[in-house]
Length: 262
Ligand SMILES: NC(=O)c1ccc[n+]([C@@H]2O[C@H](COP(=O)([O-])OP(=O)(O)OC[C@H]3O[C@@H](n4cnc5c(N)ncnc54)[C@H](OP(=O)(O)O)[C@@H]3O)[C@@H](O)[C@H]2O)c1
Image (tube, rainbow, N blue to C red; front, side):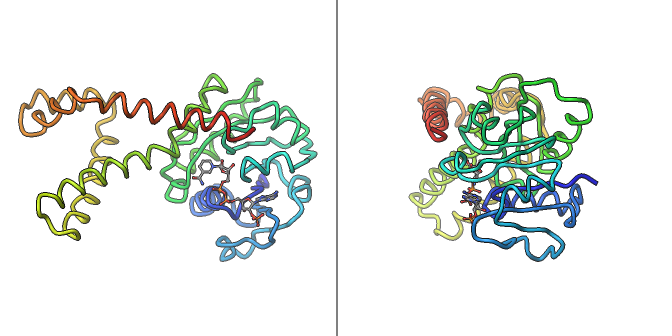
């Protein structure tokens, strides 16, 4: 069985990824290492067989896959000799060239994910610059699939674009939900009723969108063609600046991604 270690494994993202692996039994607790500065396995401690260390090199020496998941500003404080291990970084904005010098290997994968991994609902795209063996590709795919959905993507720059989506999109959706909630309250609907309604409507919306598959525009068009109340609302939205505003938000998040690892 492959030993897998997460440096920063007790943080928000690291523990979410670990939870996905442990709950799906993709990685068994006795095969999982976590490392941090403060010691212990944090919220993962209920899995007693997990090994924890404050020495990242001890983790590296014992693992076949090493995940780098410390804050971007801490990345350059790590100095590892990864040997033959595969190194997967999920750190925002830390470039491959830096990852290679941090880990002492060119078997480096740059990936992105999100805390939704804890519920196996993350989207975790990954990029590797070299030709990974079929076995390595299958291993990376298996680990990231356990967190939700994954795709291998063709350029490193796309990881920065996905960094500007995987984190921000849930925030954007919350912003949109808040706009709907505010509107409902202004119409005299009680706070707690508006809150419950918005939560249920957004939950159902994501389920429907995921079930429909296909480009989102097709689903939008279906509702426009149905020509009911939704169509009236969508036509009004289409006249407004919503698409441009979303695009501006994503560009701002991308610009922040490009500077966060510097
Ligand atoms: N959270 C998200 O939504 C999200 C989404 C996408 C990507 N990411 C990326 O994931 C990484 C971690 O983010 P996070 O939100 O999970 O941060 P976090 O909650 O602050 O966790 C950071 C983890 O790293 C450890 N750590 C910090 N400095 C360290 C060092 N020098 N050596 C060893 N361990 C160290 C921390 O433990 P100690 O303090 O005990 O050392 C903790 O386990 C970041 O690079 C971020 O860009 C996060």
